Length: 227
Ligand SMILES: [Zn+2]
Image (cartoon, rainbow, N blue to C red):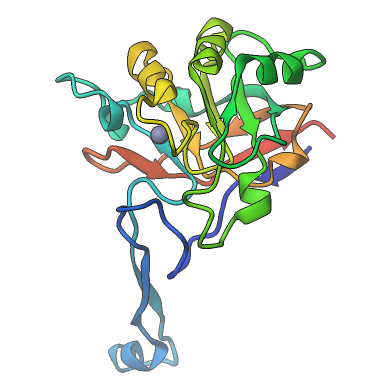
């Protein structure tokens, strides 16, 4: 068994999606601050962190994208939504702000072992090529309506991308987020290292934090491989 880390790093100054809360990290306690609290040589340090509930590697709660009353927040979603067997399709080669279509997905799936109810990850290459750069939050391809329809037909349990969004940043419709709203099938964003799991079967884990009323949550996404 081998664990592959599919998560991006969290740090102050990390690029975030336009308008999202910026990540702040600071030293909250130092060893010197806390040493006077103890009569031994014990002391501790800790950080303060503020982070958007949509950054960096994260899963969308349905309440993020569905305005209907009762759309579940992250703490109300069944925990077994966030793990399962699946595979990763390679849809690299589509330029930033261009569309990934059903044809791309068909080609990528032609020699893949993709099953109904899978965790379906899509490798666009955005994180590998531009992760951590100022371009990353706006320069990535996204799925068009035909690709969203393709996803709907394949009935994944959940899906995810190695880019800030499965939708094209130049798109004003957001067919994939609408698909998640309509079907209740949510998705992960800002995954990493998908090149290591392309074409493989694996067990995916991406458990959200139990944030009361959260509209999403950072996750530590991993794939468990059989070898
Ligand atoms: Zn999303």
